[in-house]
Image (cartoon, rainbow, N blue to C red; front, side, top):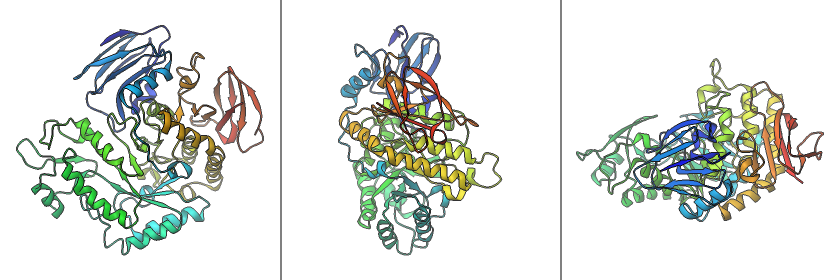
Amino acid sequence: MKTTMLKNEFWYGGAVYEGYRQPVGADDIVDWDFRENPTHNQIMPLFLSSKGRYIWSNAGFHISFQKGEIQAEGPESIVLENGFNDLRGAYLAAMKAHFPFHEIKLSDRFFKAPVYNSWIELTYYQTQENILKYAKGILENGFPSGVLMIDDGWSPYYGRWQFRGDNFKDAKAMIKELHEMGFSVMLWICPFVTPDTLEFRKARDKHFLIETPEGKPRILEWWNGYSAALDLTNPDALKWLKDQLDVLMDMGVDGFKLDAGDPCYYHAGDKLFRDASTDELSRLWAEFGEQFVFNELRVCFRAGGYSLMQRLCDKQTKWDESGIAGLIPDTLIQGLTGHPFGSPDMIGGGEYTCFLNGNENACTPEMFVRYAQIAALMPVMQFSASPWRVLPEADFQKVKDALALREKCLPEILKAVECAKVTGEPIVRSMEFVFPGQGMERVMDQFMVGEDLLVAPVWKQGEVARSVRLPEGQWRCVGLGETEGDVLNGGRDVILGENEGLVVLKRV
């Protein structure tokens, strides 16, 4: 497929992790090979144009933008469709034709209250005592109950999805107590099986595992070592896993964080129940997760429109695009590729070493606060490192203020969530999506929540105010400070620093 860019045309899509390099314009040179997902985040074989065109294939493809010339090639046919006027028109046309939304069954608790993940505070030391202490600390420090994810380490090993008897003396009682405290409870799982265990032998004998071409279980290398992998194309293997998870849900567990499943961990050409690419295995893991109303996914292929809460992959504790600077653009591409129910991951990042004393890459209080402010008006706001532990009192108060501002804006957030369920449109929307023809194509560091709420967080180190691009019309300040209710005229750039660095405006 070859085409030439139209005048003042910009393109968006493909890989969520590449959001900071988007949009692509006529002066840009970009080359992406998405024939297999090379990232650890969502990917869609889709690119959208600000001039109402889109590119689609059922498989990943290689695409090159060379100063106005676009060329794409892949294993399946690639189509170029046009005539849809603008970015929104292109998205809606592509979505209806290629990834119409499934029935969205996600729990609204994801959006109404924060998500808390035990990883940073407990790492691999997940115990009944520590989990309850973590939950009580949330409430004692003035934060509301919400969804509590118990991360990796709660089970004895991968494939045996039961609570460790030594660390959880009465897991059912713990879950009951967490429910009484107001928390919904999720557990971390992965599609892997620890080798040389009873579960491994059972799965091997029933051919539930991915096998080498020679018929031996494939042992994969991933971030936690070496494991066998469930053959997700085998319905009986999925039932074997689901039966274990049903026992947990009978105990009161509400859902699951489905981690791993990255295409890069699989081997093309391995023996499966039915033929599938490495991307397809990733998609099947996402498809499996849809059955739970409480779920979280991180990496998938062609799962736009699925009933999934999708997070960004772990961000580094840096101010550049690998860290804070990537949060908004990546989230915007999430929405434009059909993944509206998103989270910018754990506030401050998901690497526990960055919260240890003496680490030169430690998350600073300023960085933590800015991360929290960016996350505050996103669909899902997720904590892991406890702000009351890692922050001085003044910065802790800024995080509480950001949470209070979210609560104030919650009706607008929930309105956008309901719209996404019905229309498939993003919750977090790019300025160009809502305001075509106003020169907003490259504005990727501020966003709209639905149609009416403009959010412009400060994201640069050392800054307390920022330039905000106001669309035409009038905009009322929303906040907790003295400027609450002030009305600004649009159609211009203005320097603002409301709410200690979190600018929120509502269309009048």
